[in-house]
Structures are given as C-alpha cells and as structure tokens.
Length: 159
Image (cartoon, rainbow, N blue to C red; front, side, top):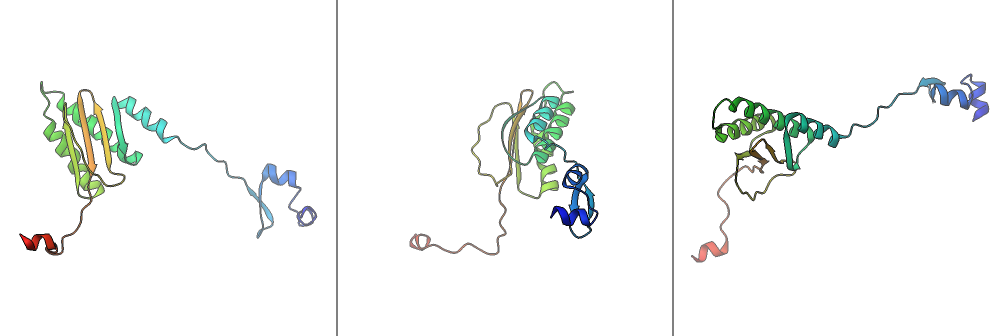
C-alpha cells in the first residue's frame, strides 16, 4: 500500500497523517476535520440553572425543552414580582399554553408553594423545578383519539 500511494503522488504515511486523510477515489489528500470536544449537557444545564436561580428537582425531558421552561418560568416570576402576593395560576396557565403551542397538546402545569402530586407522564415529558419559593411541575400525558364508545365488558352487562 505504501508503494502504491508513493507511486500515485499521494505522499508518505507520515505526510498523510500530518496533512489529512487520503480519499481513495480522488487519490489526493483531503484535509483532516478538526473535531470540537463534546458539549457536556449536564454542565450547560447547571450553568443555565445557576444563571436563572432555578433548582432542578426532577426531570425526564430533553435539555432544550428544560431550558425553555426555565427561561419562561423565570420571566413569569420576574413579571409577577411587582405584586406583593404573586398569583401562581396565571403562571401555570402561561407555561401550559406555551408548551401546548410548541410541543403539542396535553401538557399540564402546577405552580405553587406547597402541593403534592402523583402523575403519570409521557416519556420525555416531565419536569419539576423551583424558582425562589415557587415550585413548578410540568408534564405531558398521552392523547388518544376517541373514535367511538368503549366496548362493553362482561362485568358491565351483569349490573
């Protein structure tokens, strides 16, 4: 292989490794592509959370969607901070409507200082975080189209 490459004017192995990769169909040196180090999404999300004063409690959601929720919630909190007692209902409604519009229907949102929950969510559609003294729970459920009434079960007929 070395002799064939040298005869075809491609250069030595040392030159090819230094300058780039030999493309077999063109018989010339193609410059090597510089690779950037992979971005650590965990570190990026941590930096965004610190910047926005967000404390992530639990998540099963892509990082881009998390960031969008954090930024919108922070903006809603900043807008509500003018009043002496911020109302969490409009914040929950705004966050829900934004996610419904951007990522499809069936998003649910709860915002408050003290609440409990037990929810079933779609894969990749759950986020629980807090900003200042408010906690935000955002999750998506599965939507199924209803084509007709559900079939009767045997136990329903006996009643």
